[in-house]
Every structure is written in C-alpha cells, then in structure tokens.
Length: 211
Image (cartoon, rainbow, N blue to C red; front, top):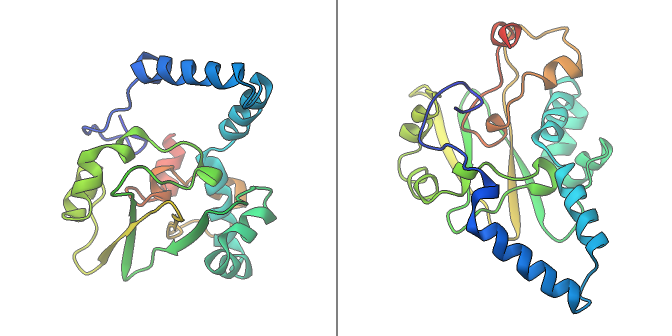
C-alpha cells in the first residue's frame, strides 16, 4: 500500500530479509578490522542518514508555499535554501528543485540506478529503485502515474527528470486549494513523500482531515 492509499506493484520488501544485508555487514566488519573506519564512525553516519526523512522536504515545501522569497532561493540554490531550515545538503552532489505548475507536472527517476536526494529526503522507496519504474516512467509516464493513483490532465505536460550521480532533483508540488491561512506545520502535513518525487500530489484539506 502506498502513501496515497492505492495498491500497486511497488511494495517495499523487508530490508532485514535481504541476503545483501549480511554481505554488507561482512564488508563493514572487514573494513573496521583493517582500520579504514571505526564502528562508532559507522554508527554516527547511520544516525546521520536516518535523521534524513521526507519530512525535511515537506518543511521546505511548506516554507516555499508561504514565503515567495524563500521559494525563489529554493529554485535557484536548493542547498542554500535547505540550510536555512537546518537541512544539511552540503557536499559535491548538486540539487535542483523543479516546480509543478498549471502547465507542467514533474516526475523524478534515475534510469541508471537509484540516485536520489538522500541528504534531504533520506532513503528512496524501493519501487523508485525497481527496474520496472526506471524503465517505464520515461516511456509512458502518464500510465505509470495512473498506476500510482495520479491522473494528470491531458492539457498538462508531464516532464520526466533523470537524476544522476552529480545532480539530484526535488519536486516542488503545487499548493492545494483551500489552504489559505494555514500555518507551515499544517501545510507540511499535507505533503507526502511521493509528491516530492512527482508520483503523487499533496493531500487536500479534506483528505488531511481523514488522516
């Protein structure tokens, strides 16, 4: 079941059941034994990454919705704008925020692997890394979005953005109607993880009242 409440073939498996987990742990232990890094350094990095969740993106979107000047900074320099809210996206990887409008709906993919704005949103959903999503969304984006429960009007263009090792994308979704007067925390609660990728849109106020 996805966050938007629709069943689709992108269920997330249990990571702890993956045979890759044991292999990764074995490599980690070997590197620790050889002094490449310490267990404490590994744990600190894990904690750092675990603190990265899509709620960071939701806060950034909510601020952009209520602060036009911040929105302009976000669109021109995503790293700097994120830092204003205490989200550290520093490093060699570049980030770009692309805005949904009445004319265009944006969706993100990484056709080669699973490049994703982890420094801001944390780990990607497993369906984002699947071959089915990576291969199909660039060819038939409307059909893929429909499977997620999102029907994009025919008069609106769907733009697919391919992430890379050097550049990661973040979608700035449109603000739902009827949210005038809502505070940033309330607005952030309307933002779903998938709306930051483009396979969903933020909850309406009516949907939020049922959550």
